[in-house]
Amino acid sequence: MLEVIDLQCTRGDRHLFSGVDFTLSEGELLHLHGHNGSGKTTLLRTLCGLVSPTQGEVCWRGTPIRRQRDEYAAELLYLGHKNGLKDDLTGIENLLMACRMSGLKVAEDQAWNVLEKMGLRGHEDLPARVLSQGQQKRVALARLLLSRAPLWILDEPFVGLDIAAVALLEKVVADHVAGGGLAVLTTHQEVALTSGKVKRLRLGWKEDGHV
Ligand SMILES: Nc1ncnc2c1ncn2[C@@H]1O[C@H](COP(=O)(O)OP(=O)(O)OP(=O)(O)O)[C@@H](O)[C@H]1O
Image 1 (cartoon, rainbow, N blue to C red):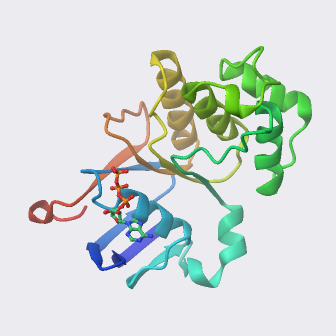
Image 2 (cartoon, rainbow, N blue to C red):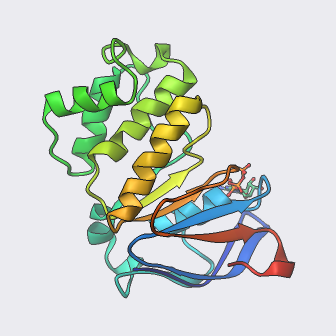
């Protein structure tokens, strides 16, 4: 279970949010939304342990994440909105490198299959810099199809995707949650699941609370 207790964050001299509390259990998805600049990315990065909160705690399986960095990192998949691709590496190289860096052993043919499922057949061997924005996003998202991490934290995963890729990603996330996974994501579109529970958290609207 992911538990967030009385979280407060400031960046520079800007107060972004405070009093953020929620829990997320197996089979649940948290849809985080709010206006531009409300602090969604900052909150996601705080949940990953990449930003330190000014107050409060993030706990994973009952222990603060600051006390179990490596164990937590092994159970987490974070995809930021910048995709994290190396421009000079090909799609397949990027995917294999990302998997290896997260400690996931993936056979090369498995990686090729996954890129094909992501609609990238014939583009696997091109450097990321010549791929379109949507294709780069697809390469980054291909990691989800190989991941065994129970907790997914996804920053604007639908941005730049066409209708077919949105549908595919919705299914991948829904399958993850249906299988007992947890997901936290930001998106400006509605999130529907066929099974599992969707919780919503809006930042930047004090009048209806944070959860
Ligand atoms: N390192 C930093 N130093 C100072 N200010 C920062 C830093 N990182 C973020 N901010 C500021 O914090 C605010 C929230 O940024 P954040 O990226 O978390 O918002 P967001 O809700 O994800 O926005 P968007 O919907 O536009 O992606 C912004 O005003 C941003 O300029």
